[in-house]
Length: 426
Image 1 (cartoon, rainbow, N blue to C red):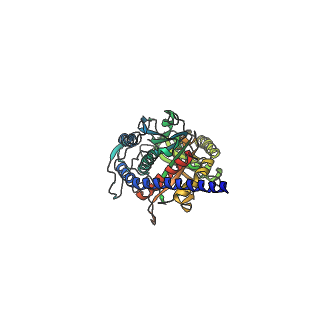
Image 2: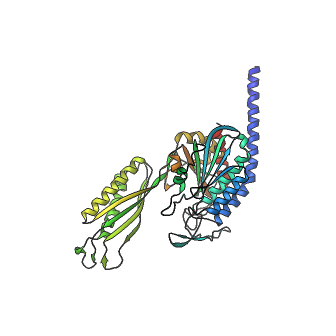
Image 3: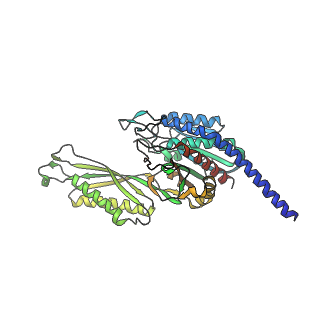
């Protein structure tokens, strides 16, 4: 009987300690929300393009240093890394936020609207956080502040990765997750697992969406160069028309998706986004260039599609009397959520957001270079709701009208904070 009473007393004491810890964190959450919103507005009004996030990095680094966190700057050009060591040794969890904006001219009436302009690929353009990276940055700064205040509750180490150039480095430059990894961001201390999130304009505030295995696609950029024979537009039989060949190639590529890909297993996309050929209406040109993207969610399908694209491109061009070359460059791998890690952290997400608000989702054919981190260690990447509840229209990401509800960010702070503590203190 004494043993049973002692066990019950232990449970009560543990429960009281847990309640005290949660109460402390709840106070921290209440105090941080206003700051997170202010940070988000600041970054939104002052966006910077990929590999040019100098002022953004300065603000992040200053905040981390003010918290007593060890800070590394100029990682992968403009990246910032913070290292927070807990009370006791243990595993290392990494939390990642992307910090770059897009060459998009904002078109809304927000009081913190961006009026910044810059030059992108030689063209004057507006600059806008049209994908929500401003919210990701502000959320992770909030998580850093709360965990720094509660480092006595941490068994292990938290590594905060503020990554530049997620949208892709400018031509001729390295950048993004790949360059951070190349410069050792996953070492010293060696990372055991990594978490990341992405705000979503089409998901209501308060909702989290997740998926095991592939949640975002591998992204390839391909270039097809078609060679024909130039001639007068009035005498096409005297030459070989690369524009006609290009049209046939585009048509053929789509049959790889519609007739050769097992779409019941995973989605796949081939898109030609740019065609360049010719200079004058009455001249059949000598060459044409096609540039596009391939999106896949399955490694075997990826291999098949790329192989068949090369074969079809070369064969079609030859059949019409010309020639063509096919080249491909990987932009991201499959954003692959580790099954065991997702299952381990799912109860935490459900506790924080509520069971009904943590929802299984389907994969998207968008891409994320967070995938490169997941090739090295188990990772969990999920979507956070940013749409005002009740809204019937959500503006897509990467558009001038893109909007995110500030009320969605606190759940991101809570979720990443609690996931980190539960992972390290399991």
